[in-house]
Image (tube, rainbow, N blue to C red):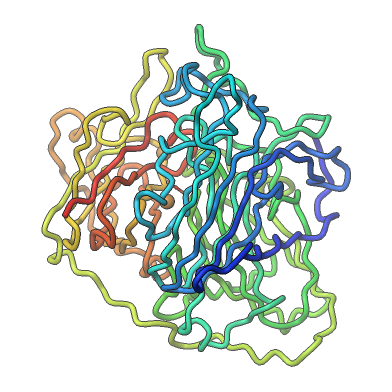
Amino acid sequence: MKLRKFVDPLPIPSTLKPNTILNGVPYYEVTMLQCVQQLHRDLSPTTIWGYNGMYPGPTIEAFSHHLTRVCWKNQLPRKHFLPVDKTVHGAEPSNPEVRTVVHLHGGATPDYSDGYPEAWFTNNFQEVGPYFTTKIYDYPNLQPSTALWYHDHAVGITRLNIYAGLSGFYFIRDTQEQMLNLPKGNYEVPLMVQDRSFNTNGSLYYPCEPEIPVEGVCPSVIPEFFGDTILVNGKVWPYLDIEPRRYRFRLLNASNSRFYNFSLSSNQFFYQIGSDQGLLKQPVMLKEILLGPAERADVIVDFSMQYGDTIILQNSAPAPFPDGDVPEPETTGSILQFRINRPLCSLDTSTIPYYLTHMPILSEDLASKTRQLSLDMTQDAYGREINLLNNKRWAEPITECPKLGTYELWSFLNTTDDAHPIHIHLVRFQVLDRQPYDVDLYQQTGNISTTGPKITPPLNERGWKDTVIANPGEITRVIFAVGPFTGLYVWHCHILEHEDHEMMLPYIVIR
Ligand code: C2O
Ligand code: CU
Ligand code: CU
């Protein structure tokens, strides 16, 4: 299906209003619903699943160290409209087909509110019940200002639930951010970037099996998903009218498998001011920004000299990353069009501050425990490609039990040909370095022999992160303080097809 680019304006998801405020705590109700939505001017309305019936979901605004409470409700149909593979762990026929659980990605959240993949709930149709239909989750927001996002996390069908539309922004604000005089209001724009494919009738297309079908399994999980169409905030290739001034963009890669290497067709710089978990120490000037699935970048673009121009936000990341096909400039190489055609409606008094926030550097000597964790590819019982963490599966005994208040160093040894965006729930980490090593020797003997120097992360990765790209053939090391809560959490690859197919493990924070 060929769709005209840049014919629809960029939608901005509305901000959610609390249903009530109890003892100073805002209380929200959000209901997951099946709806139809116009995703492009020339496309018939598309069936989606949305929080409050919206794709993307409404934006939640929270304030650092102020509790938010959300009641999540499932009122979805009993059948999925996308192909569910019942051989995948957690999606067996003995479980209801449509299950949901909400995770606040990047949130420092107590475990009972973190959206554990097995803590799913349903619409509780009588014939499959009794199950919960709602969950009330507490978000203490014990972290500095940043862009988080909430999305579905139900074991075995996360890729399908998010693809159907279950994701939304969640901003944490704080006084540090407010003092910086950054572009705000209409000049701060969230950008949720996703790839999708469509059937000619406008419905979402998701393959029901891999290109080479698997004996005896249909529908079957696929190794990775790449759509031929790019959507921002739920619109196909939209445009945004712009005034000649500075804008702040909150970039989020919410795609299933696709990486994006963002650039501007005007060859301008992005001023990156924040990463996944908040502000950087200082802005970093970049012509390209790479984001794997679930990563975020907080950037300022200065359009003040660009009046009359049209600028395209472009993508050059191969799919699969890093050794796949380069995107075509006319399709997946294009994301969004900026039209600098609006008169300046007030003087731009915003700034790009020289200094943003205090950023302590965690030294590796702090770590009381180091874990070598391999990222592996093998075959499952049906002969399908399967990616694992430490050669373990979800249901095996838990091996990672870090102690609250200590520091741990996690060292990811990627033995595969794919880059994997590795996400750890609960904590924020710093990337120490990446280093090439001899993969064959490691796989044959278990010995680690490095083949080049340690590479320190680029300047825009020297802040707090919750998701890190582990490149093939490299050891990627991260360090973090364990906490702020004890309990049961997960860590996983954020390529959703990998996550659903066993590339996810539980871990326990112990006292
Ligand atoms: Cu964005 Cu475990 O998730
Ligand atoms: Cu998360
Ligand atoms: Cu992966």
